Image (cartoon, rainbow, N blue to C red):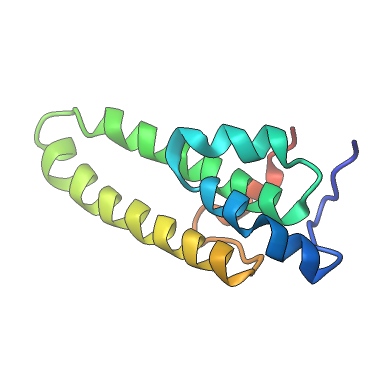
Length: 114
């Protein structure tokens, strides 16, 4: 099935039916469920791609956070706050029915093609 390059839900029905799936896209490893089960929903798929990028960045941050001193006192605290804010923004957008790219990672998520 061909996915649109610029996902725009055709109806409010798609948004209302898939808000929970969009939310699940931001819950860490659970992102695999909307990515593979909701490819037909532009709304859920859009948020799942953003959630995947956010999850990947969180994993990278976790590894970089193991670096003594710089990771412990700089990367983890600041990066953790940034990831938490982006995660919260993504959840709010998903539950509000908005298709809005997250700062810093939204452009990367739009480039993902599955």
